[in-house]
Image 1 (cartoon, helix red, strand yellow):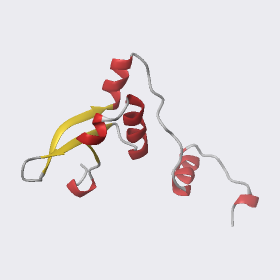
Image 2: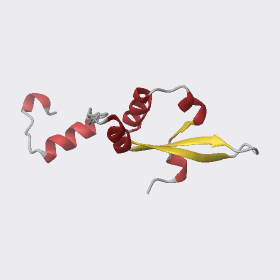
Image 3: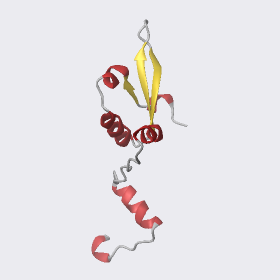
Image 4: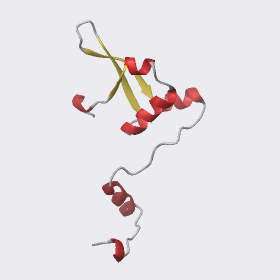
Length: 94
């Protein structure tokens, strides 16, 4: 479960001016399948007013959206190499 302070959300104001591609880009950037939409109540406190779902967007578009599988760190590359049992030659290893 994601702790509250780590939840990412899009403001309702941003959504009002966004296109589907912007929402998909935001989901890719956050590396998540869902993104909350928040607004603020009359006292200024944030409240959830919506959610975007990667699979729901795909269903409504009638197309599969390819995920962004680009490694974001060397550790991700290393774990992929280990998982696929790819050996590094000595010229790449200290």
